[in-house]
Image (cartoon, rainbow, N blue to C red; front, top):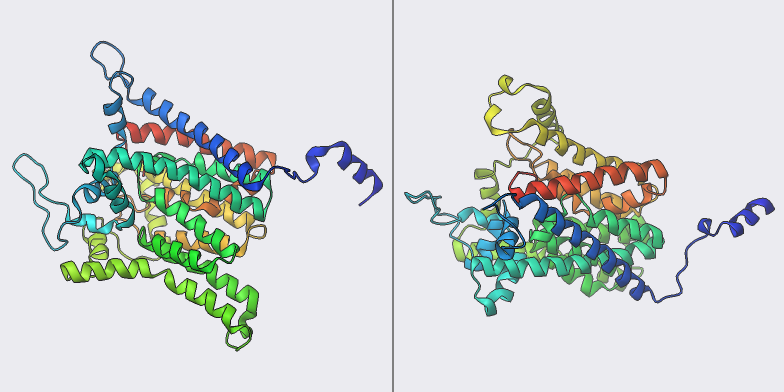
Length: 427
């Protein structure tokens, strides 16, 4: 370093690493709380503006607060609430409708893994454990977990990078365009903090806690199995490929392997439950195919179909009445933007972050929905993958990337929150 550069660095403190003298946990809580409050105010304000109707007799959120909150009961959230309030239905029963159009049961709800809805149901027992009790309890739990998520993410990123990168990572996760679904009580409310907890415990070599968090993760969503990547990376980086099969440091290797072996236990316990109670161990997979049309495909097939939905005019397709081409357009955006971010930052991110992010993409895109909207929910799945937020934070050190990401993130955060509140499909 030249003398001139050194002098410039001293005269420009922004160029120096930002080292905080406050305790790390206190800093993390302060930063997490600030972003939490900022994002919750934004979610609340956007919801109120979106659903309130002008004029006499129009719906007003401030006059009907409880009913205003119910505007967030949309789409798949209903399944979580049904399981929380009533449990699972026999997955072998058919879907029947009463003459008034109401359902007699929800056997397809078995596709939603139990830890999150059951947790909501258990906590709501003192309040009555009805459908709406479960909703309000889940709403509180989801947002408390959001605060914990931001705290965990800040700690994880600040230890690997710096405070500035940690702040931006928390910001991009909190203002993810699909945040409203996490805040409303989708399974990601529990999935995201558990994922970060696994990475944090592995980093601190707290193997028992890492394994337990991993098991809870696979009992929340099946793609939680992918956190086994972080254990594999640690093994290879620490012992090398050749050293994996030697007796050297055997105890240390067994701790890591034993912790990783705990991860699938959540998934296996759900399979065992379905087998014992319903004699249908893979009912969750069968209903994904039979009800939502999810089948295994090559990754490029759903992408091609989404492009076709955008390019072709509605009259040129047989499914014209079943999809909105603009949905496929923004789904493609939120498919490629996270992948581009991970691709551009892979040298700067820890290897396990990059591999985990791409693995979530591969697992999600390989089991898409039907041709009407093959990329449905892809943005929510990738948006809840914390390495994407870290990649955005790293890119944001360059002004033009920061501007681009802020515009896209905040614009769609506002748009999709409004969409969700009024019942327009977005997740």
